Amino acid sequence: MNATIIDNKIQELQNNILMQLHHRTLLKYTGQPIVENETLFYLLLPFLNGEIWTSEQDEVSTTIGIIYTALHAHDQIDEVDATSKNQQLTVLAGDFYSGMYYQLLSKIPNIALIRSLSDGIIDISEQKTAIYEPTSRPITDWLHALTVIESKSIEQFMKHYHLDQYIPLVQQGLLLNRLAYELRILQETHMKTRIVAAIEKSEQFTSTKRSAERILEELVSELSSTFTRSISTSPFLQDEVKTLIVNRMPRIACEHQTTREG
Amino acid sequence: MKLKLLYSDLKSDIEIIEKELETALNSSSHFLNDASLHLLKAGGKRIRPVFVLLAAKFGQYDIELIKKVAVSLELIHMASLVHDDVIDDSEMRRGRPTVKSQWNNRVAMYTGDFIFARALQYITDIDNPKAHQILSETMVEICIGEVIQIEDKMQLDQNMRDYFRRIKRKTALLIASSCHLGAVVAGADERVAIQLKRFGYFVGMSFQIIDDILDLTSTDKQLGKPAGSDLLQGNITLPVLLVKDDPAIRPLIEKALAGTMTEDERQEFLGKIRTSEAIKKAKKISDTYLQKALREVEALPQNSIKKSLRDIALYMGKRKF
Image (cartoon, rainbow over all chains, first blue to last red; front, side):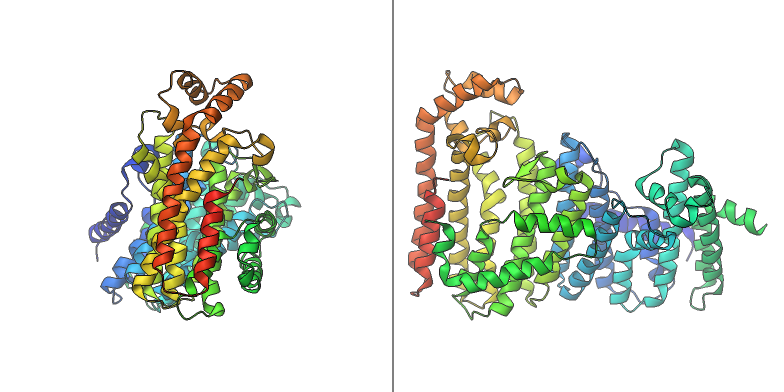
């Protein structure tokens, strides 16, 4: 499967999500619902690797994308002031998208999956809230929190369809994307997000007094190596899919990888 | 009479639901636990669970099964309140600080998402696709209603149809679905389930109109917020729609919508609207819905629950506060 076919499949999924969520007022004030192409790539990974993919899985993958849009919308709410029309409608957009994912799965109907995805959203909400708690935690806790936030819904989907072998790859790939994103934001804006501030406060870093940027660079570098190893040694990934994944790794991660291993 | 006295027959089952709500809101996150406990302590009338239970009495009543529906509906209501407080920038609810004011907007968003997901966890114990279709459709419709409410805010040139469309989605739908789901999950006759759904819809419409009247006729102390808050927030309710063309009141309404109303002007506005025909007319419209609700009760099969439904409808449609 070449890169164009993959991009087309991701685009098709993206279009299905947007079609299901179309709402004139929400579109006008909050813009198109957002779900990252990279998230959709990992959601479709088993299909891209040639696994049997039913029409139900196709339909359900749209609802998984919708969950990401719903949760993403609520991440856009300002901590202090949400009084603008755009913010008020973003709150409702997230709720509307959540209702839509439930409605679509009810129509299939796949009640067991609704249950499993709800379990996942509970986990995600708990991890997101933990970032606001004042307690200092070890770095492994924060990496776990980010893994849950980024990949739990896809994980539940894969468990449901017995595609468990893909889960570690999805977790590593999406965590790497998130860390690379946090690093890029920090480098470009010099602003620490809540999660970066929390990571910086982890005990193992307070003693060494390393900067947040340095910590993130190390994490990205380390995870890049682990992920690259996981891909190259995977017994079930097709060679061309392995290449595709490596090519899609965040550039920042590849650069660190080269520095580290080169 | 207190509402709880009207459903004293359900007391033990309501207690089961209260306990289940407590369990449902339990979380591994300290913040979510605190926020949820906070919501539970704030209480509430538990109207939706009561309607679920009463409607289920028209079928095979099994509290272990039906409590899943009742808890789920109350959780959905709670989640929407937490998010509404962010939208309305509300500091207080039922005399307590809101989740968003105690923590922040983002924590309130995640709390709402957590509670909503818990609601779905509960309802998925019910293996009945129709029940899920009813509930999911209701949830989508409620959101669309809230979007419309924001669109209609500050728009004085709206008509009564806009208002009724809004309150249907804002309040009546969830009460209608509570009744409908209670009946469907208990396996009641389909015709009875639809009658109960219509009953819930009419009660919900009557209830919301009374709520909108009380926002203008109650004291600040009774409300726990300034009387006339709906208008001050830009929400045009039925009594305001009924007086908006009165030249003595319209300038005051416009000032409220422009955010330039002084305290003296608020008092003047309240004085004028309270003595106008608008309150009486709005009460009459609420009463029409109440009568329709009571007619639906009459048409239901004979059983002891009919009296409870009638009494609760009357309570909700006639309440003074």
